[in-house]
Amino acid sequence: MKPTTKFDYELAAKPQIKAMAGVREQMRAGRAQMLKAWEESRSRVAAAMAAAAPAPAPASLDTTTASSDTNEASSSSSSAAATARAEFSLKSWLKELALEQYCGEFESNGFEDHDRELVAEITNDDLVAMGIKLLAHRKKILLNAAKLK
Image 1 (spheres, rainbow, N blue to C red):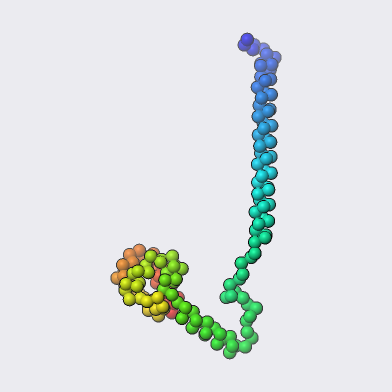
Image 2 (image 1 turned 120 degrees about the vertical axis):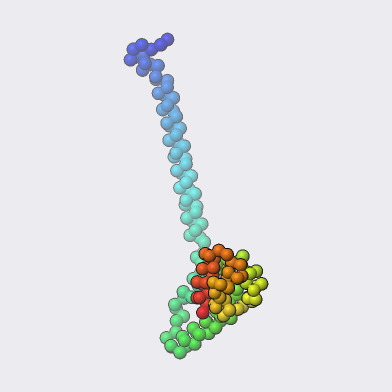
């Protein structure tokens, strides 16, 4: 039977309206469950982060051990610089620059692992001769080598 009047249309639509109301209610319940699960996981993550121990600050940032005696401070800074020079490693330096793929080129061209002074004096022509073709990598090496002086 085909509806012909407004009343007939309303009667025909009632089951569909009831079905849609049920779907809407299911969607609301699903959203509520999702929100509850999200809030629970968020609180678990926050609790885990609060329970984790904070990382210790690097010694270079520790200002509580600063000496008021200038002679002592200057001698400690010069000994720190000497220690930094003695602890230079070409492999670790290249790794810090994310250019460790060039370790072989440096070693095959006579650079040893603790040649800080030699690395500090390197030029662009040296890098080209070594086979480092990418300009960006050469610039990065040259800029950071200048900091070693």
